[in-house]
Length: 282
Length: 282
Picture 1 (cartoon, helix red, strand yellow):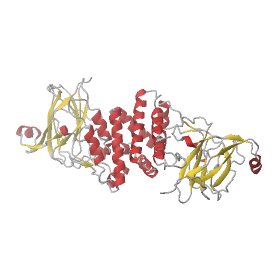
Picture 2: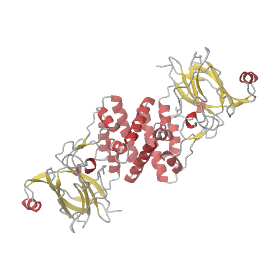
Picture 3: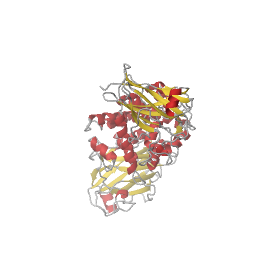
């Protein structure tokens, strides 16, 4: 068979799938992977090295560590999936990442998540609105970030599993606020084959600092996103390509005495203000 | 970032690789995988199902079983790599498959591999030549196939590990011959996630019958190929897309009394005649 006929036969082999969408997705995967082999003129030795890479990734993957998810992230595939599924209008979405935890506890709007742990106090506040700028009452914010040592609870046995994460409900005017800490850049895991690939490629291994947020409200498309302090290192060089222009937000010193008094903290503390805009469900 | 800028950033991230070829291959992989996501408008749920598929493939992969190699085969990627690396002229190559064994023993030209095991006696013979049709003296043939039960020794503890495999050296005129058995169609392994994908896609799981052959000689490009009896089931529907037009060969009854007497077998036996043409090294 010629190159074209191998590709056509492999695409056609999925034409009888029980689920037509499965057949469509697989045929397109075949089409584009074959185009990759043709354009790169991939040699058998290179194919074998690729296979060995996947085999090494398999060996390091378990319930707590998924090298394939990381590979998807550092190839920008996770971000690409995010971008193509972004509805028109509304706040940009971004990647979910591996550290989301479904059992975060509901805390009062205004909660202090920072307590007495080390870090720079940061007051995060804003509103949840529709694309016309009208408030959405009682929208839910699901929030998580890393601690002052750069680690998430799942990476750090010394942290409480609920540290620096919560759900809160906005008030009737869509307002939310909470006290937390300035987040920190961190590296993706580099002890596996993906780390070796990043090293061989002389690639940056860091993500810029970010807050993770999922915003949801009945009747609206759920928003999975991240907020990036504008002055973070690596803001222009995120190793998983999650930064979107509209998600880069100033994180500035504040002298707001009323907020300082409410939390019993010193001024200046840091402040980030961000309004989310949700798209109605179709 | 837009779709284009995510793709450009991810491609550019490989531009500083230590090995420029690594950077080139990775950038092209990014380009084509992103194009797949864009054209299929892959949803997050579908991406998660794909990730789960790879995770399940990882769980079933070990030293004796590689689900990623099988996935490459049934997507036609292995065949595509084979086709793009095929040098001009000469006999078509085909896929190596998972059952090649580097320690096959050197046997005399004309060897009887069939012995007294069940199966249809088949005399395979031909010549090894260059692309001008001149014989290549003493070229090496590395040969393997499955037994009458459809299994290779690696799949069947009742077979000798060396059953129906050998290396032989052609004579000074490039002639080779051996007595073996008619090979049989067989299915790819279907007990893993690839098997589930083939079932959901209502795809054929069989390969047509074939002999595996590697032909090598100093100064020539080594040839990894397969010979397919023309009357085999699934000849038009190989689940790994390995069939090439020039490798479909008649396997016909023979009344050759001299050959029958040499091996002490009855007529008619089966006969396949095939000449290999090797391409000189660059």
